[in-house]
Image (cartoon, rainbow, N blue to C red; front, side, top):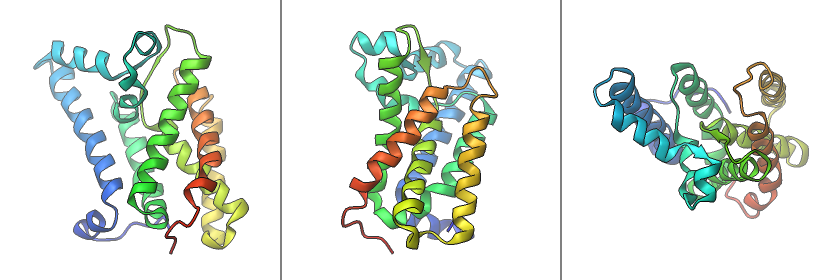
Length: 204
C-alpha cells in the first residue's frame, strides 16, 4: 500500500491529485527560496507569505482564503521535506480508494478544518502554515479504515499506520513551534470525515 515503485509517468497518471498537491507545495517552496532566501525579490517573498499564511487576525478581517492557502505553504527545507515525503507515502493509496475528487475533498477538508479550529481556539494574533494538519487528516482516515473497514488495510500496513500516528502525535510536542492543536484537529477531522467519504466510494 505504501511502497512507491511506479515509473514517474505512471505515478502521474494514477495519482493526479497527489501529484498536483506535491507540485504546488514544492513550487511555492522553491519560489520563496529563490525570491526570499536568495534575496532576489525579498519584498515579493514577504508579501506573498503575508498574503498566504494562516493569520487569525487577517482571517477575522475578511481574508477567508487564508483558511486554505496555509496548507500549501512551507518555508524551511526540513518542513517541506517531511510533509512532501508524508504525502508521497500516504496519499496515493487513499486517492486510489476514494477517487480523485473525494481524495481532494479529504485533503483540503481536513486542512481547512484544522485551520478553522486554530481560528476558533487560538488567539487572534496566532499564525500558522504547512500541510502537516492535512497529513494528520490522512492518518485519521487510515485509523477509521483500521477500526471499521479492516479488510481494506493489511496487517503490516496497520502496524505502519499505528506507528506513524504515535510517532507523529508524540513528536508534535517536541518542538514549541509546532501547531499541536492543528495536528490533533486535522487528525480528528479525518477520522470524522472518513465515514462520509467512503459512502459508495470506488474502493479497490
